[in-house]
Length: 263
Image 1 (cartoon, one colour):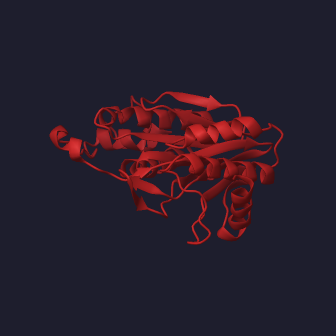
Image 2: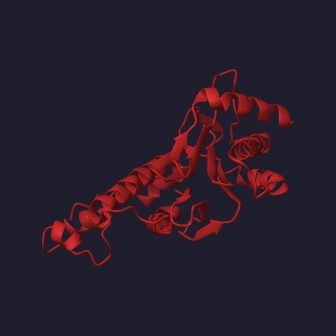
């Protein structure tokens, strides 16, 4: 289908992606980096995001804080984004690069769906995101790291699935839960002790919130719920009915209960 729709003479040997289209048209943007200046570069860092499977889907949660060295850069940063109707991605690492990667990933999936007439499989989305992380490898050596967390509902297998990545683009499917960012070790430790594979959505939501609070207790770069300022984590579920971002009215009681449970 793609060869009927696209102008002749373009090279799609590397796949039908939006980036490949720009490259074939010699429109791919570049950002020359002066390595000598990177040593003093300070950029906002997105910290802790996590996800856990439940019986019929996946819940993903991200704290709202971004740090810059030992300072708070932002208190209301969004780190969890829909990528399409049945998948979601969360970011940690260098905030500016991470947000740009998410936007490009969203465009890539939309571009693929328009060309092929169908959604890319969840497995294919995770693989494509891994490739995008790997393309950032030269920046990693300069200290600008982006590590996403990806999850979604597999319409073929009718289950929620989630994937973690390493800084060089390694992709790993997690059976139960996953986390990334500065507080990920504490979050995983909390989840490891309390997770059950038969969790229902409300139970998974409460557990994920408690894991984030536990991470915030130990990691100075992670912020838990802040009822005094009215700042609550971003919470998303993805199930058979698709992506659903919870509003503050639904998040607030869960967050306050988690603050009481984790002391």
